[in-house]
Image (cartoon, rainbow, N blue to C red; front, side):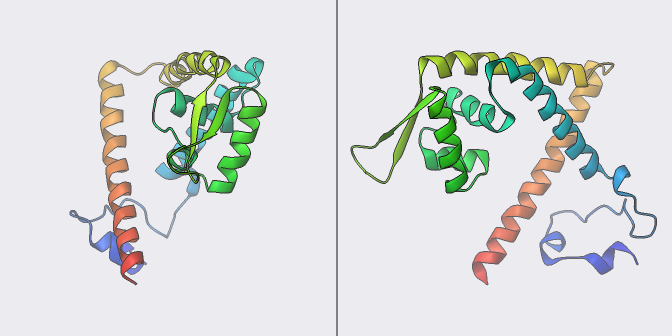
Length: 178
């Protein structure tokens, strides 16, 4: 069976035709780009969590802490979107971060439904350590790469991300129109 039998309206709507690198016959997940990216992310997350163990931060906790520190979100709803979590999961995560005295929630005086977030002094100190750990882990994973190879790899990943985001936008658009 060739890839044409597996087409989908969202994929068919791409500005360029999809590649035909993978085939059903002979497909091995261990050799797929998606599997390798997922394994890299998983192993990197485990490494970062090991590095953060003395601080008591888990992989689930450092991400929102860093996003708050970098100003990517200021409310629980924004942070949930940034971390790709549902409201319930974000509430439980914020409970843990608040319990560790790393952040605090305050109701907006303008809209009681809005919960504003801010890092505590301890949260800001913890968050300052995260970029160094991430840089160290990523640099270790890139051992042996030249600057040119690193730049090329990033450009390829950006292209894949752009395509993935285009597919997601098309799927969202089709979902809303149905």
